[in-house]
Structures are given as structure tokens and as C-alpha cells.
Image (cartoon, rainbow over all chains, first blue to last red; front, side, top):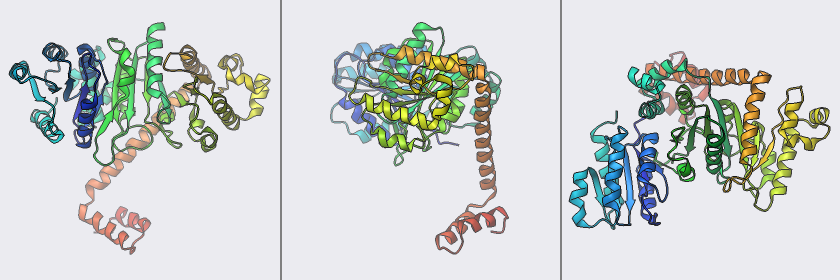
Length: 136
Length: 337
């Protein structure tokens, strides 16, 4: 009866303490009609995967400014997989050097957004990625 | 769907989370699952937590869950409801921020819910989601409402035990008079008890309690009114009257949490021994049944009614040529044809 809502977990793994970007994205997704579960700072990959499971989200948005993305991103993908949530699309925002992008995409990160990306682009791409395969 | 139900009953968390989504979205699969799960429900203690925005409901729920996990072997499900934006239909659900130290415990399951346009502090599907957690075997289900105002009392119909949370400096003198929400409290919590104005808040709440629970009662059973502060005195007496205790807490550092947890358990014991548990179950299921009947009737009615007929009648109401009451009669009698 209710239309299918897109649920997105916005999380900030790692140790840097700047969640401004994550909050801006969270608001943009909300304004686009999505339900955003915001988990706050300093989340471990385990905490993120656990929250993604409990909330049955369609997508996870990670904000990483610390440079630890090559360690954190694959770990989170691995844990989602282990929980049976390989259908969940993972997006990455923050300071990600260009040379890392191809490898992150190969790992299974759906979208990567550096500073200056418009929130409309993020909204559009998340929606497109999530609605391709309807969630089970 | 059958498999999901079986997996859920066997403790599979992926099945649980998927079923919660189906139920929240009101799908046919969700309804089928609810029917299969229903016989497994009725065992959980449902605890509602309500109060104005910013009084510390999420922090309190977090501390209570930690306490129960540490000192009992009970498993805890948490449903945290946050408001949906009426303009975009979106929501930011931020209660997990305050519940981060529950992570990594398999005995805890936290689910955030957007209210999706329902007033009353709960979402439309909250009671159905509660049933799913209940069937999954969680011992205590903590239900945190959206920051509620004065009239949002749905939680009292759903929960066995309702906590109304207040904090010093929330303009209590006037709020206490409005009272609707205080009257649903089984336990009153003054959180942020280290903040200035504690005495005023406590006095206002106590005055409120006096009105809701006539002082004569309390004199009769307790000698003097102050004694009602301690729930143990309520327990001692054989007359089986529950006077809502006032518990002072500081959720940030855990002060007062053991006492609050104890009064929650005491309330459950009281409900069982007084027979109120059954009464509350009855009224909860009655509310549920009524809501379902309403939904079903409206859906049936609307599905038989051509959209144009409805619009035509609505247009006539708008022109003040037909009153809404006449309109209902016209539509129900099929005279619009």
C-alpha cells in the first residue's frame, strides 16, 4: 500500500571528526524523499554493517576524509556480503584521490563523490542504482 | 515468504530485517507473515518511551538497554520513530547516534522508523513491527515515539508500560495543566536531573499526579503523599493500585538508570499480579482490530467508488452546495450514480 521508500544509511567510518559533508548529503537525500538513517561519527566497519542489516537499507553512504578508504571500504563491502546484503549499494564521499577510484569501483563501490559534487547528482545516482534491482 | 517466517523463528537476523521492511511497507507478503507469526506473539514486555523533543529519550533508551543487557539475560528490541517531512516524504532518522554503544551485541536489535505521515507519535505500522519482534522472541521491546506534544497518546494503547520523560526547564507549570500526556504515564522520568530547575519540574509533576490520582487514595494507602515517590510502597500494599513513580535520571552518565529499570520490572510484575496485563492486552488488540476494520472498510468502499464520483461530490462540497454529512450519506447509499 505504502510506496516503496528508499532507505539509506549515512555513516562516517574512521577517526576524522568532520561530518559536515555527511550531514549535507543526509539532508539532500531526505529532501529527495528518502529515509536516511544517520549514525554519527567514528563508526567501525562492524557497526556500519550491523546498522545496515538492522535497518534493511537499500544503500550505504560513507564519508571518509582520513585517507583510510582503501582499508575501510573493502572491509565494509566484505561484512555486508557476509550478512547476505550484497544487494546493498555502497557510495563513497570525501577526499578520495583519483588514482584510487578505479580500484574502489572494481571492489564494488557504486559511486564516488569528491568535494564540489552537486547533491542532485548524488540523489539521482543513488536512486538510479537502487531502483535497478528491486530489493527482495 | 514461508521460508522467511521459519528463518525468523529460528533467529535469523536477515529474515527479521526483511520481514520488518515488508510489514512496514504494508505488502501482501508482510500481511501473510503477520498472520503466521501471530500465534508466536504475546510474550514480550512492551515499553513505550515518550516525551517532548530534546528531553533525552534516545539516550535513556540506550542506557536502559545497556542496563538490561548487563544485569539480566533479556534480549532487547528497539523501535525508534522519527518524523517524516510532510513536504518531501523523506526523513532523517538520527536516534542511532545516541545508541552507538549497543553495537556488537546480538541480544539487541535497533530499528529506526519514519512516521510516514501518521500523527500520534507512532507510525502506522509500528504495532505490526512490534508483533514481528515479539514473535522473534525479544523479551523487552522499547518503543521510542517521536518528540510528542500534549495529545499524542497512541503509545499508551500499544505499550504495557509507558514512560513519560520530562526534563527541567521545559515550561512544566503550563505543560502539566495540559496534562493529556502525563495521564498516560505509568512511570514519570525527569531526565537531565542535574540541570537547574529540577525542583520546579518535580513539584509540577507531583501536582499533576495528585490530580490524576486523587490524593484521598494515596492517603488511605500510604499515610502521606510523598511516599508515592517510592514504588516499593505501592507494591507493599495489597490494594493493587499503581501510583506512577517519579524517577530522576541523568542519561548521559547513567545516574538513576538501575532504579528506573527496577520500576519498569516492578510495573510488569504489578500488571501480572493485578490482572491489568490481560486488560491492556485486550484493549491493545481491540485498538488493533478496530484500526484494521477501519482500513479495510475504507479500502473496500473506495475501491468500489469511481474516482469521478468522489471528485464530483467533493466539488459540490467545495461549492457549499452539499454538506459533508449529506455527502457521506449520498456516497454510502450509492445515490451519486
